[in-house]
Structures are given as structure tokens and as C-alpha cells.
Amino acid sequence: MGQEIKRRNNNMGNFVLIRIVVGLLQANCYIYADQETKEAVIIDPGGNGKTIIENVEKRKLNPIAILNTHYHPDHTCANKDLKERFNIPLMIGEKDAVQLQFVYDAAMQIMIQCNPSPPADNLLREGDIIKIGCLSLKVIETPGHTKGGICFYDECNNILFSGDTLFLESIGRTDLPTGSDKELTHSLKKLFNLPLHTVVYTGHGDKTTLFHEQEHNPFIKDTLS
Ligand SMILES: [Zn+2]
Image (cartoon, rainbow, N blue to C red; front, side, top):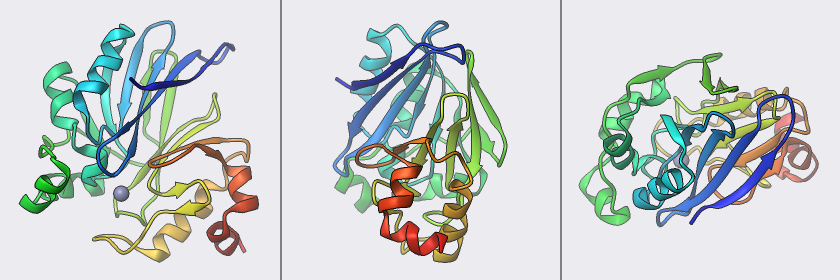
């Protein structure tokens, strides 16, 4: 079962956040829900569709969308399972939508036992807002790891879902198709304009804060200097 990592009471939208580590590449899938209305989004379902569905259903959550930070299979392999079970829109950055359809070559499918994703229903752009009950996630375009990579930011609760752009003391690789060093550097600078106490839920590994990364991430020291 997924680990329920945070539940907070304040006046800005009480939320439930569940992290489930999925697939061979151990990606983080997050379920982010409004505690009152039970509306939820599922971010980066990269595998283990059954487990994700069980986590949604046992908490009686009402999923309203599947969100992908980028097209890589380790973040999108269970899109099909969730779409079939819940019949909800699939959303991804507009510049990653095409790759979502073509990334699943036969070798990759065998290697990570991946179901090809259905096409996206909504293409996300900078500044788009996704409403989840009283919560809202703003889309921040962060190309570099992939051309259409995006982060999701809840300004009220100081939460950023960073996909594979920023990790605990590391950053996303840029050597895969559509990656770019230059673009990643620009995207990281953009993220560090957010408040430093922002908690960052990463695409792989443990959560962090922008402050911690500013102080301890060697790649960020270079980027911001
Ligand atoms: Zn990736």
C-alpha cells in the first residue's frame, strides 16, 4: 500500500498526499486529494496500476484527472489502467504529448512491462490551473529532461511536484531524446524563484525542499551561480 505522507489542517485546503513507489525504475506516483471533497489527481502513474487503484478506492477518493510530468514510460505505464478504471482525462505538457504515443517500443515494453498510454485528453501549458476541490495546482513548464516536461505547484500549501527535473541533491538527466542541458538550467533557475520553503516531491527518491537543494545540491550551486 502507498505511504500516506502528509495530512494538514489549515485554511488553505486540507489535503491528503499519498506516495506509491512504482515499477522497476522505482518512480514516485502521487495521489493528491482534497480531504473534504475527496477529489483527487493521480500524478505519474508509472506502473503498478492495481496498487494505485486500490489506494484510491480504499480511501473512497474521487479521481478527476491523471497528470504526467513528462512522457517517459516509468511515469506513464499505468495511464492505461487508470484511464480504463476511472474514465478520467489524461493531461500532459503539450510538447510531450506526441512522444507519449511513440515511446513504447517493443523492447521497452518487455523491459518494464509497460502498457502503451492512451493519447492525452488535455495538453497543459505554462500557467494552467488544475482545480482539485479547494486545492489548485499550477503548471510550470520545465523543459530540459524532456522538451515538454512540466512541474505542478500548489502555492497555498507550498508543494511542488518536480517530476524528473529536480531530485534530492541531484537533477534530471539531459541525454535522452528531447533533453537539453541549456533548457534544464533555465528551468531550474525558474524553480528557484519559488519560495525556498517549498517542499519538493520528486519523480524518484525522497522529498526535499528548495532551501535544502540551494544549500546542498552541487548541480544547483553551479546553476544558480
Ligand atoms: Zn524521466
